[in-house]
Image (tube, rainbow, N blue to C red; front, side):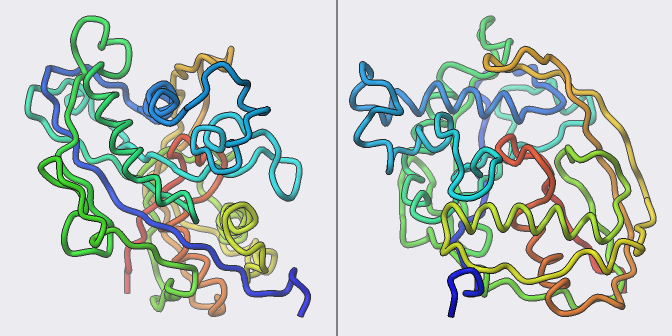
Length: 310
């Protein structure tokens, strides 16, 4: 069997951290770039053993989490930048009241890790703890936005793997693509719980499946076995979703690596009739709840929740 037709597979872990603020906070509507930038500053200091050597010349870069998160430019396949092996997924804070937080307020921060890089979960915890001590965002300069990491939990595990400053890796596990079951319902509602960076909403089912499959393929190529990911999208271009809610938003970008200070994204809920979809396409739909869809996954964008409407 040729490698290109080998069934694609990848190990992944998805879950969330509970952060508790130890100061007052002034947060942004979307914190994706804020958390990613803060993680970069903290995790390099935790992981790097040779700060004098350029990352691309370092002999340890093949297994270095910081290198793969921030410095690696070329993907194993294709011309796009590589998928990143660890993603933080903050909540969208659309209500201004949710952005002004009091001491002891808790925030749920999602995470997604791939392949061998899931073993770096202790480093991610330490990175978050470092972020929390200094604070994140502009308000950290006036003593705000400081937090502690209260708990870490994998989505499918009953008990947390991190709590009360204790790490129990017996409660930290991974799954693979074959563990994802196709959606059985014929009518669904897709809610974008983080901003979608594609060109428009609503999407046709063909576009939805295309954006989802692209994320999975890129992940499998980088951190999985490089095999074939099933599911067709072109036959479903005429299956149009009915928007329940759609909002176009302009977000401010806070990035030291980009001169762009704003970007456009969408939020919303879309209803689909998927009665004509095959099993492979229903599997892709279910996979979108894990991998999300669309560009800018490294900033936690394009993640969804699917609800059965039958």
